[in-house]
Image 1 (cartoon, protein in one colour):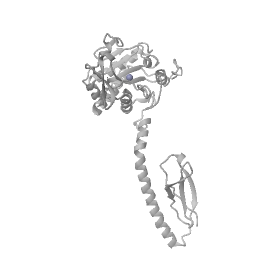
Image 2: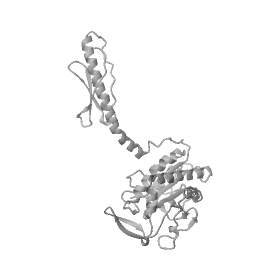
Image 3: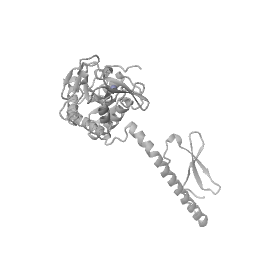
Image 4: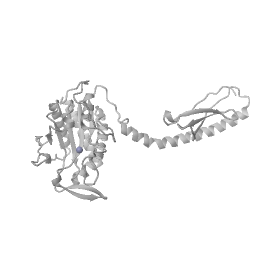
Length: 345
Ligand SMILES: [Zn+2]
């Protein structure tokens, strides 16, 4: 046979899984078989190369070869399409996880918002009235916010990815080291035990508030070196959240053990909580938002509703956009200095 012009079908799997071995068939036509990492031939990935001989003397054999190749090509194309269709949901989920599908991407000089999804798998936070834990609510809201903030032109980062274990100091350190314009910690709320009763939902223990405790709340720390900037953002957030028609919860200001948080702005639901570690350890402006109260049936339903959840995310994005427009937070420089070392856990 003469020289071959080859066109190798690309396999939609990782490079590691691709190990090509060229073999010659008895009739001289080359085939490419793909070997898995373990060295075994993957029968679904036997690719036949398109080929032309330079010397078409044996036209009959060439025609037969051509027909066979076209059939093989068709089979390979169908296999590839089927494999791609199976891979797409997996790729989509992976992209969502690492934020690759969060277009449009912002310019490098746009402000960086580092989102901080509260809690970890080993410490999943409050237990809701449905027996679910806070962690899932936080992760879902952060995933939504990544998209909404990117749409508003912000650069967006996260302190942890789903499933990652991380301490409070490390969260603050990550945002600070990146010179974040803002660290925004996302949580969902509960209340003191005296207002909770234990119930059972779907065989799981759950907690239900014995009186209505509803609404969002926003926290800033007076021990954050950018307190004034943090407060400006907190108020801008409060204005947009209040505009949704759901007032803030004021239960953190109640004069009982575990609460007694001073309200900086009662109408907007902004509290001062100096000891909040993730806020006080950050060297960049930092705000913590309790999106809603999970032990209250009505409020849990509110923050679980996809339409309302999206409206909340839009309001948060608009609030940050307002703060930026109004100069609430001057642009920050990336600092190589870390005031606080990551927490060892
Ligand atoms: Zn929390």
